[in-house]
Image 1 (cartoon, rainbow, N blue to C red):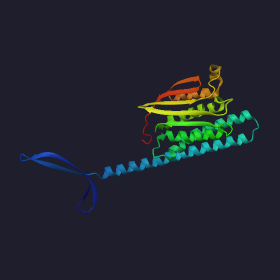
Image 2 (cartoon, rainbow, N blue to C red):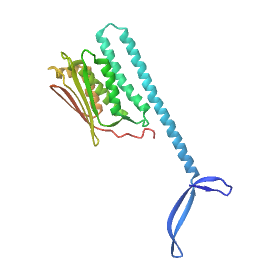
Image 3 (tube, one colour):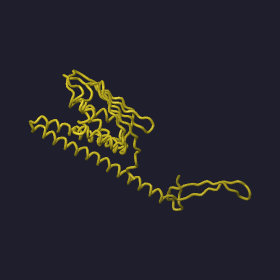
Image 4 (tube, rainbow, N blue to C red):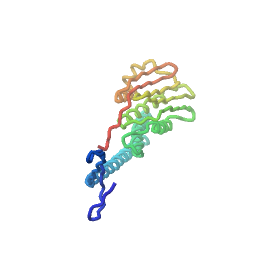
Length: 257
């Protein structure tokens, strides 16, 4: 709503209507206020928020690019070493870095810079892992069942890294001596509770698993990342291996305030 001053200048105004009485009769009392200064202040806030959104998007973009540079440097190291064990370690590090880079890429592409559509992220992450480990000689099927879930970056990164470790471990060890296999990833949400289940139909856990948990970097990372998510984790082994994690979804805070 606008008003016009005596000099003809147009200005924004606010009209407040209140019931009242005039000589005992009900009337409506109208009060008009000049809200020019309030509108100017609101516009400054909007411009400031927009600048912060652009800056935050640029930060995510640069972080993703910097992680890509690190991945490229690791690739150079892979190409310049003949040690198979070193190559494996470097490749694993590349996948871990790539899982983080994907998070920043998705946030950069998103309209909401505080939340990531995790279901879409999972598909791309698994594609990268599959390209690195699955061969025509041993086809491994990976099925993804995911609800449309949004995570903050503080949950998306540890959850993505955790999935990377579990799926990579399965592709490396679960199907030894077998010609094929299957991995199923299920991410479901009930209320504020997330249940992540990653299972395979492989050979199951080794007899020395308890000892391996202490010595294996992969298992150490899995337990550490589960702790970062404040997740309850159970690992079952029989006809394959099942990881079950339950944790509460984190509410997004207003990152632009």
